[in-house]
Image (cartoon, rainbow, N blue to C red; front, side, top):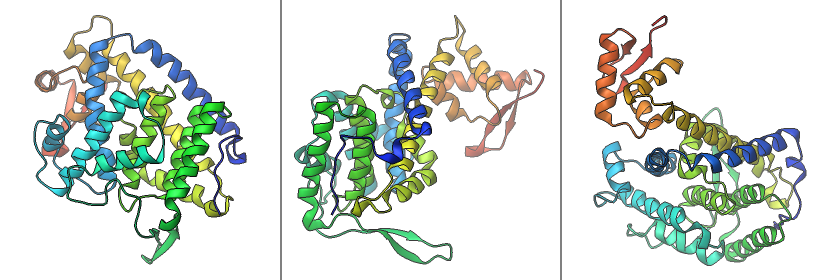
Length: 351
């Protein structure tokens, strides 16, 4: 039977790779605390972009979608949901906003988990929101020949309430007694939560929301400004592979959480580096907005889409980006590739 304890670091995490990743994240955290006091307008713009990207990516991982325009309007609460997908997107927006604004007062207890799950489904007609699963669930895989099989069996429904209580108590004890690095304990908790799979639906989205909540409570705020969910979506094959490897033997307390924790540390570190890169772009000494756009294109290897420029330089309007691209094309400094949604730009060598 599965038991939980975060008093000691599991053997699978006692590796040079894990410790080096953790040290690099700690260093990035320290630099961010200094960076947040610089370019407040840029930081605010990054936060606005990250909210949209986080909501979009976390839902898209689960096959929940809407158009980019509708996504921006829903996240900004400028419209009402018009479909079941949009209802679930609006719920994610609400929980994400609650975590962003009130993380410090949100304790990790079974009751709070139920409340967050309830709010995730508050805009839907579903009666499952705010309730632990009422039937056993399975994690399925597909072999190379297309055959589906049961890869993992989470905690049975009948045992879920007690298991979640034990999980939350173990985490609270670790944080209170400081027996383990808070970030490591948080990632282990999220992994175990995912393996318990306590709800009939919404477990993946809840796990990503809990990742942000626990990171913020531990002082790691990068997810407010760079979408961690987007980075997970970008590398989702590695995400699922790490989950699969770390869950082997989980029910018998014989699993190795290393692959999942190292994957997540890599995601967090990539997000911190993205944050620093975007701040550096926005902080070029007295550079005009067209100059910053030109510098981004010049320094970027390969093709660049207009949307990527907007994400990297969120304080610059779409009109300014379009005007600058037109001027650079006319000056033959960049080359246009593709049409429509596939349109991208490449810096011309030697210019």
